[in-house]
Length: 455
Image (cartoon, helix red, strand yellow):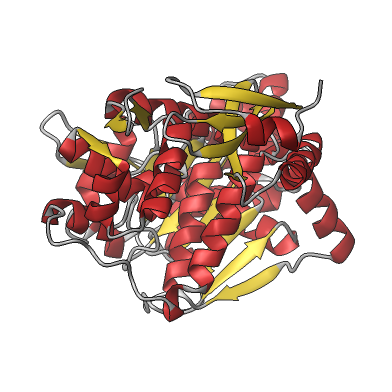
């Protein structure tokens, strides 16, 4: 039988709280002290929850049923009625903060409670508002208290104090005795806070499940609207956030040029496991205080590092899809160009590979000292043997005879050198090989050296 107004009016308080069911999880809670509260039990995300629907007779049966039906509609739409109400209250509190005086603290309320509440509140992350935390902390300090005592501590009316205690009781922060008047006891923090934190973690995990869907929508919107290839960033805080995001979301590769002053001061932080990181540092960066120690640390974590005497720019490129390049190399506060996937970004990646081949690997001795090694070039021992002969203009037969190779081996070596150098003719190969073999000499000196070797 559905609950009626006549049954509610005739119901008498008992020695223990009792419930008058109104259907759909709604019930009227009759307390021994005569107070009557509407409550709604429901389940959300597999968890049983309870929210208040008002007090009787201020909220009559019809109004309570209307609130119940509205809550059920929210549940059908995937909305937690309790969280929805809490968010609405938080919004109302924020909008009226400038026009409402803060609630006074009673003189007998411990100062430590007041001070802690006025500092940034970690419990706010668990959906516990300011007054709820005040009441919970007051119960922790006083161990056990009546509604009247909490009202005096928090400078509230008994009705507001009762409503506040009912709220923290529904969140599992407090329990109450069956005596009259009831006395409230704080739930131990290791149980109450951990339970709320577990629920919030589950909510966050469910929210994270929407990331792939949202990402797909973002990609679709970008492809339809046309995303800018180049942007200029002038805000240093925004730059820091972008750098941190790129470092955390790198999937395959990070490459970069390092010059002083450093573009990315948090160089010692490692990206995700499996990300291949390569950096080239020039003399200005190496001379910075602590730079070598930073390089030593990241190399221990798997990063590859090389040295080149002078770099034209400094930059960071992630997964060959997005890059950051300062427009003023020597100005640490200058604008930064953000470059997305394009032919220009591909050219910068190719330029990095070109310098990488000519850069000197950085190694450290067992004593931790920096030791410069010879560049590892793709023109290896075979190049050193063939360079003078190619530059001297000898034909294949003469080169094979002088080098002690068969014609087939010679052709294979030359083909390998041309492929590794990315060139098409033997003239280009000879010139490129001479440049790599004698990088610090002028063209005239290189020609003289090649002629002498050929003789």
